[in-house]
Length: 439
Image (cartoon, rainbow, N blue to C red):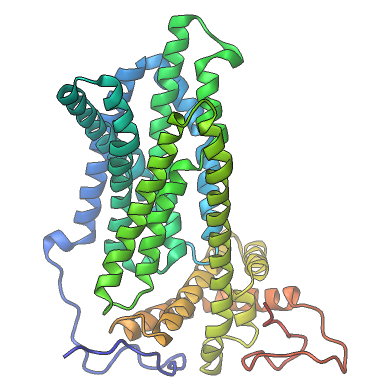
């Protein structure tokens, strides 16, 4: 008989029981389930992939071309990583997930793509005796399928093995985007290095060179192309992450649908060069830019939604004594969160600032967890996860509490004049000057 998903209960006050009475002790994982073994295997795989892809790219571009391509391809990477980190400010995932995602895209996914694309294109050319047609088919059909599948593997691995860090669409968006940024980084080295080699043979330089044209198209015009494609896969996994566990079909279909959309968009983009002399620019202006704008708006809207959930869900913990009355407002405002971090760092040092950031992250995770539980989208481990988060908050409360209190007072909107009619949510603090829960 199927069991119903866990529902949120009234929070236990601070200092209450840490776990259910008579709960069995933790199971000892088998050797292949240990975190150190898995981490060593992943690092070894990525390191070997990196060495092989380094040798392949250098062989194709030459040492000088490789160095030029590496320097130029590095330029957009910090900007893209900063953009994805900015989107993830409300509930930032650990850096190790981003490092893994970027490394997978730059090493493992790029290696898979180079080997699989080359093999498929050569096989088609041999079978059809039409090298030009094989190149076109490889770019518009083979490459999108292979590359998006290889990048999606990183999102899948984080979804399966870092499930506690993968809590929604924003997480899927960020992991997918960072993976694709790593993939584009390696691909740009190859393209820019080959372009530099062509210029060396032809004696070209300056703005009229192939290198300059390649840099303009790939780095200036469309650095977001690969992240845009793979973000669709990440959105599919993100929706699956907030879908109830008993909806097995939906949790399987959504990531696959996102992957198919990513492949389709990638194929359309690659095929735009065959739409006539100005086909590429028409597709870029009329399709790619609007899609990019739409997904950017979606990501920002999702971030604001997370802040709204924090303001809605945490007041129940205020009643149980876990938070001060002004904390839900402070934790549901990016400005107040920044003020709290800076206040702690200024008075107690940078370590205290990091402690406040950790506190804010755990509080956001708690709010999102309870929100999913209220909608029946969590499993039987809800209480265990809730208690883990509450314990983490209690450890950091001494440092974060005063900082959040200051931020709530400093960032609160001005008091409403007497006699002014306004609506206050049921969970708004009753102590003036807080009237903060307005979106």
